[in-house]
Each structure stands twice: as C-alpha cells, then as structure tokens.
Picture 1 (cartoon, rainbow, N blue to C red):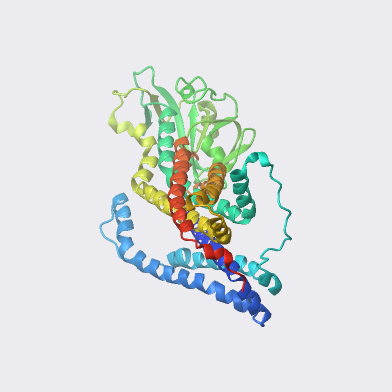
Picture 2: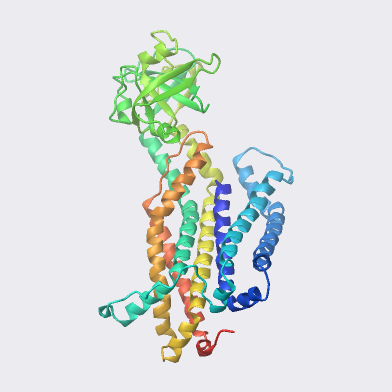
Length: 496
C-alpha cells in the first residue's frame, strides 16, 4: 500500500516538475525561438530543460537512500519491534528496495517530463518568437453579459484566459486529494470494520471442540465448520454448516440458511472475487484435491471472514460426515459444563476484531504521518500552480496597477478567481478521489488474505475540504504579498 502511494507521490512530483519547466519554457519563448532559428535542435533544448529535474531527482534519491539507511531506519525498526517479537536486527542493502524506491520513481519522473517538455518543444521557431505557445488557433472571446457586473466579468475573464493552467490545477488537486484520502481514511476504515464485525457476529461465544460433547444449555446450538482453499485462488475460505432454523444466524441477516443445495456467501467474498447471486463458487479439499462447487443463492453481510454458509445437512453430505457430526456450539453465554480438555478454542468478540486491532496497532502511527505528508504536498502543489498562474498574468496585474487599482483590489480579482477554481476543484475531486482510491484499494486487498470493505467516513470528506480551504487561505495570503511586489514597469516591457 505504501509502495502504491509512493508512486502516486512520484506522479505528483513529476507533475510539478513538468508544469514548472513548461512555465520556464513559456517565459523564455523568444530565446528558444531565436535558438531554434539559429540551428539548435529540439533534442539539444530538450536535454537542456530536462537536465535540472533529473539532477534534482538524482540528488534527492541519493539523500533519500542515505537517510533511509541511517536516521529514518530507526523509526521503522521501532514499528517492526513493536509488532513482532524480534530481539535484534541487522541492516542490509536491499536491491528490491532500491528498485522500488529509487529506480522506478526516477523513471516515472523522466518519462512524465520527457512527454510534457518534448511536446512543448514541438512548436515551430516562429510560434516561439511570436509567443504563440499553443497548437490551436486563438478562440474568440466569450461574450459576458453586462448584468454580471465589472468585477464578476473580470474574474471570469481571468479564468477563461487561464483555462489550461486551471485544468492543470484541477488535475494536481485530484492527485493530492487521492494521497490525502489515503492518509485520512485508514483509521476510520479500521474502526468501521471493527464495529461491523461486532454487530454481525454469530454469537457471543463460538466454541470449537476437539471431540463431540453435549451441554445442558438448551440455547446452545450445534454447527459445523471447516476451512478450505478457494479454487483457483488458493485463499482459505470458512465454510459453515448451520441449521436452517438457527436462532443465531438471523441475528446478522434477514436471509435464512437455504435448506436446498444452494449456499450464501459473505460480502467480502463477493467483492474480492466478483461473484454474485446465481454464480458458482468452488473450494478444494487440501489433501484429496476433491473439488466442491456450490451455487450462490444470496450475499449476506458478514465482514469477519471470507465465508460460505450452507445447511448443516448439506455440509455433512458434501464432506462425508456422520449425520450427528458437529464442530462446536454457538452460544450467547459461556458454557460452563464443557470440560476445557474438549475445547479447541473459543471465538469471542476480541478474536473477530484481532485483524483490525493488529493493523491498527502496527500501522496506526503511519497513517497520520501519511496524512501530514499529503497535506504538505497538497499545499506545495497548490502554491506552485497558483504561483505559475500569477506569473503568467504578471503583465496584466502590472497594467491594473498603472490604472490605479490597489494591491488589495487586484488580489480580489486574481486570487479570488483562483479561489473559485480551487473550491470547485475541491468539491468535484472529493468523489473522484474516492473512486480512484477505491480502485487502488481493491488492488491492495487482492494481495492480502481476507477482505476489509472499502469505507470512507463522511467526516473524512469534511476534513479534506477543511484542509483544502485552510491551505488555500494560507497560500492566498502568500500570493497577495507576491502581487504587491509586482512592479508597474512589468507592463512596459516588450518582447526581446
């Protein structure tokens, strides 16, 4: 999961490099046009403009590896020592880690910058000299009705004139929101999983016996259980044989255990292997290799494990058990009359949530760090892109100063226009980032045993929106200072 998020981060960083370099090319357009007209090739200019991003990336990779094997290793070693009974460790250089954290990110940075910069340099020398840095012809000015008012029309003009830059800002906010969502969603997801498992438990006490033994508790209910690998994935699946008249099973679902040859499966089973009602599931016996195929009647909410539910009678027939065979008891109270020697294990509420507890215990400290890192990267991205938009409009801002507008008034025109785009982008990218994250999360869970249903708490969206608004408020204050420092003489400059 961290590796996948690393690559999302690298795409964002490559995106920032590419946009910054592209803006530099636009600033130096006339110089590039002169050089191209003088005989310099696109390849020479491409090597010139891609050199700085690559040099910075290489330096960062070297420093990152040094920090990873010295200072930062202590932090992650403590995570492992906290989770596992390890007494000591020895640091070794890992070729796989170098490949995943250094080589692949550098390739991502190189490819993204090559595509963006080479496309920018495909323009003709004449277009560079004229500063016509687009492959499309100029569009007609959009007519805006006078009833909108001067300030509103001015802001709309700023947005229309900078549509490519604002589209870039939108994509950047989307990528940053994906990373931010990952950092904020995991802790609520674990809490939700824990609550759902507790709410959907079969019974307070689930006894697994070493040998059949009777109990005097009339409310205790016999059940059958085995664990077999799914075919063809090989992942272990819990198979329950429960009485169709069970008084415990209706506690977790309104669907009853089918009395015929059909079975029920858990939601996690359906989500992981994309199996739905009316389709077949197949399990394989470990030693004999015998396959058992069952038709799915319905899907039930049981998040504790990948599970198949069938009638106890059908269970005994399938797996060749005696008519009085059972694995243990379901009970809401502790069975005091069963000797401990006959009890293999007792599954309680604590055992059902142990996966979430373990993940929360071992990785819970990482998620806030990811959220903090995503917030910083988010602020950096918005700052860089909004700064580029101001730089592109520096001459227009200078002209408005000459016309008598104050820095505060200009800020209301340009910064508020960007603020509108940022707010719209924030609102639109919240659901888009959830869709993208759900897809990535599915890839995560395919490589793990079991299944944790994707869940984003409503409070997470609120936090993301608040972080976005506060971040832009801070950045807008910095950009206001930048506007004040744009000289009036900028509007009087002519192209070289």
